[in-house]
Length: 96
Image 1: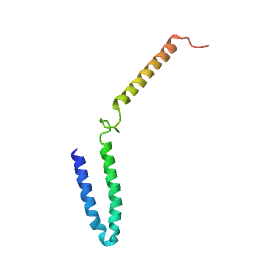
Image 2: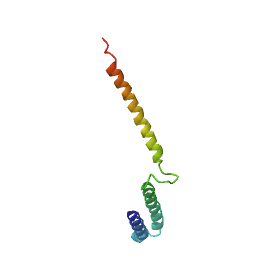
Image 3: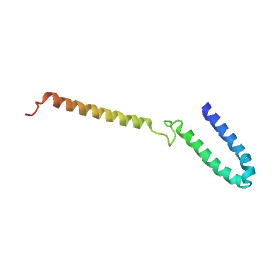
Image 4: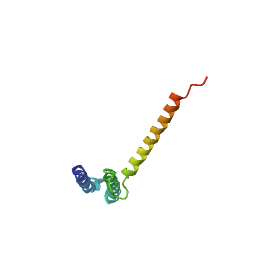
């Protein structure tokens, strides 16, 4: 959580100081360039915030219970299949 707060503050300080860096070279165009850059940077920041905790209870989070149940069913199925193959291999005579 502290890393997220530090990242937000650093990003905002950078974006606030960005127009002063471009003002001399670009003049009034610096506002448009800074707006586009800010949109991109804040978008990346929001994406990072969303993927920070993917297994929560929000609407767009991953459902860990469903995923773990799917893995459990797959492992159980493979266990049963391997037991059947082992039984046929051990107790049936080899051809020829």
